[in-house]
Length: 465
Image 1 (cartoon, rainbow, N blue to C red):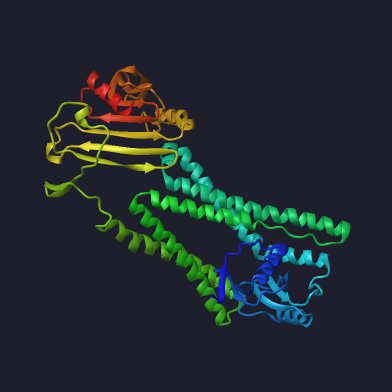
Image 2: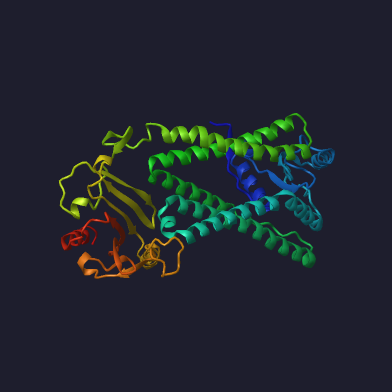
């Protein structure tokens, strides 16, 4: 039978009522709180019994204090004199227990108790959530900017979806914490003014735990669905962040052990966060990720290699849905075929390349981008966006420019498509097409000298339609 256990408490800082009820239930199950740390709440086994708990706040305390101050010790002595034993403390939060049946409460003045919670919340709790919320909003704003620049690419990247969802959940959690605190404080102030009683607190522990498990579940799905090399990179980066956090808090704990003042500890910890962040980022980017990416374990397996003008070239043999052979007759067998891209629950976007060897550049080539729309409600939006981006004018807006590209709608029935467009430069038709089928859109850019026959168009329609 285990004698200790750790619990992810995830309680709201000011949720005095919720914490007391939780600890009393744990005592009835035979567990007594022993320590609160960044790694969870540690409990030790005891005889199951009814124990009263009290959560109070001491605004003068700080998480950087090398040891409790004299005023804090005096407060503990006073509580002990009235039968309240210290169970554990974490910065401003002080948790006591009392085995008497109906003990005298530690806090007897609701006005003073509310002011104490307010002072403690302003010192660390609110500031932490303000900073966290600002970072989350900044990340969401960055995602919105990326989406506005290239929505098709953004919606096809599982990492973008994962990041957007996580940051949105984080904003929700911060909003619950900050908003919940101010709503409770307003009610508590009103109750004290009207009845002189302290209002019970209400946290969001179950919601926070649910959101945390949702993030972990999404992370697991994300890791197992992306390409192997990127999955390993994400795992390494996540491990590095955890290692960085442990290093920072370990450094702060070391300073506390050497009795460094709270002010000096705070400054040194902030500097350590900045220095270690850059150091870990550099280490991961230069040493770890570079080694992982360049390792043979991640190397794409080539069908074979050849040398041309002193350079080694690789020939790949990826399977493509549409081949040069579907467009024109050829008996050339030296093609290198590449197929890669991104995929999310919304879209799958892949780029396909079929190129001849460097010593056979006279042979025709083929390249295209295939976007498969998994969510039907997005189809019209993706259609409009791809049509908008199809002409490659790079910001040029005046049609008089001789190389100005425009998309002209053409007969889609020849391609077996719902809609078809072709690039024109002035009156000159280019060998570039945008073809829209029921659940996919293909941006086709074959060899500019390739003659597209009715049979080639029919083959494209057969494959994608």
